[in-house]
View: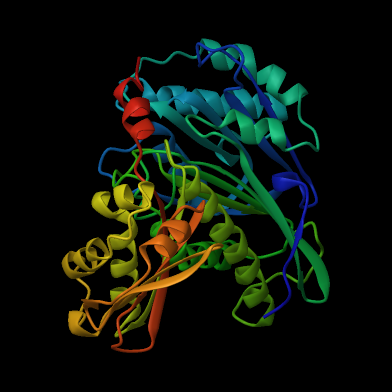
Length: 406
């Protein structure tokens, strides 16, 4: 595997990309940007993964059609309205693509379109007609406005970039995402956009994304709800100049490593910024019989409302961890399970062989008082392991979602 290094620039770090974010009027709050654009100077290989919810936002249907040939040049996304369960949803999405394409001088089919916000809220073309010309004029090397424009209840934007080597050539990959609530994806996350300048075929690009998602974005849960608009889109325009990756090998492995580095980073950022969250929960399950067993056990632990509430209160209630493993569906012998809690304040073992052990409640409270908590679960049955990310459950989560629409 090649070496991956963090760099600055977000989605604009790779060669040939520009971005912008403006206020166009989808939101009522004029102080928040609500329309974002990512643009590639060159047509790029492109792929996406989507929510498994049977109720899907119209932009997902349109994007699937546009990506049928495996290429794209632009991503446009609005926040403040999900464009879901609207009679004119596909018209809005397709017309948005057409308006943007006309401004950029590209084909409408080369536009990926996304929306996030309230479900079932009426939508019109007026904000897009007004905002798209301004959005295109604002295109530049600064990715921050675009990363801000896709936020809903997020408390901060999420963007990162890395460099890696393929075929002896330096390549770059950048990302941005939003996601704070209604996250238990089983396909993607709320919204994630990834850019690269590596030359890679559409088939291998789609394969890399498809192989990465199950162990990264699909291992994030904030509240157990699967959004109607989940989507992760990846574009790679080849402007780094490396020999095109068309099959497995060292270059494909390097691309996958870079992608995995960013998706893990985003997964942790999204979980830690869950609605009302004060703590990031990172569950590492080891010793499972199979990868599937490890994954479903880890995700059940961070998804447990009771465990999440205990973590909020810094209560080392390890029985809730075992409870979650027990109902997860994982093939495990509970009499072999061990549990420890770990953070910057130290580590405390609370359970061995499926039973409690003496531990310092004072140390446990210090460990669980930190902002990032590792829940270490050993199943003692095999060699497989997995990691899942979540957050604590707080009073603020209820407050946010008690009046989200109004």
